Image (tube, rainbow, N blue to C red; front, side, top):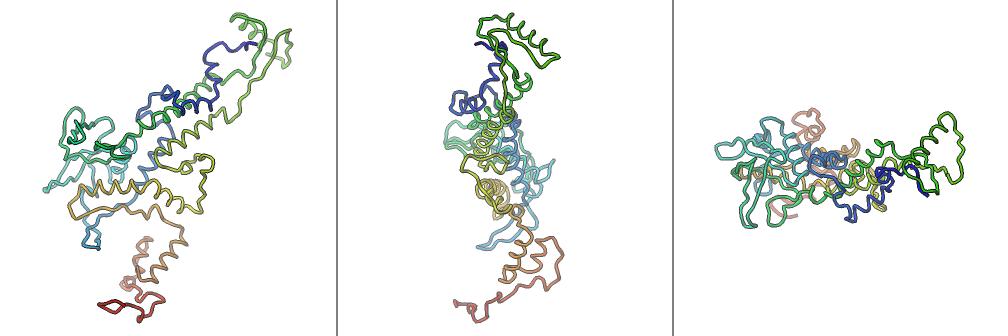
Length: 395
């Protein structure tokens, strides 16, 4: 039997099961999925944008502190280096770090160009170079890198470089996630385009007239028109010998392409090292994680995804300030617990002599209580003076 409405390749294409499309691409039969994947086009896929923005925003949004170290002691620096406090002529420090990290997580490399220096030759300000406007090449793995901005070779000492996902062996550059995830990203773009075309074309015929007799296109068009006229003002139609009426239905889940969208979202999260539940995607069977509270959820994100981003950003900035100083990103903003837990921790630290009342109030953005608030409890609560080691020797 031949369905009357199978008249164009578009109908045949839309009849493909989207799960088959998904798994065919994963096997490598449709490696590009017919999509051109670039940094900009990849951002149009929500999973890619959310992964990139989540990493860049969480790392750049944390406060950053500068210290000096003497032996085992570290001392906070009040006069922060210009490159730490104000690294750009045009945006604030947090936005500058967001630009650099977003470029790194998108293409594997964040690059900034130094525009001002102090008398010691230390960079004071550097502007992040847009993706696509810089290039770097090496003639061999032992050769120094040659940096270009546009078509102009620039001094490598003026380059501030944040590599991600690497660097690859024999190169100073980080690996480009677009190249490695091109098939997965292209698949997500293809599913989205497939769904848009599906709805743009009216989905699919809800009813099909089928006959066991051979007919040509003119016969099919005439049968379709007569059926439409017969049912225009009536819900009942009489069919002759050899004709059969079939309803064509699609489930809501299939119509929204939820399975393919979720599967590509899970894969894209995997490329970025993010657990899919952080972005609302359903993990594969057996991959569900239940968190008791938001702090545990954020701690998992910190350990599995963000900690090496923090380390890379710290090394990148530390390498541009005067020797003897270094920067640390303050993670308290990410790991801020609920009020009850936080004050229990404050109480324990206060009783054990590791903090003071004024320090606690400062962390809570409250006014201190005067000089008495700077005192530490000593001996610690529950410890008698006789339990403490003798001065100048072991206990």
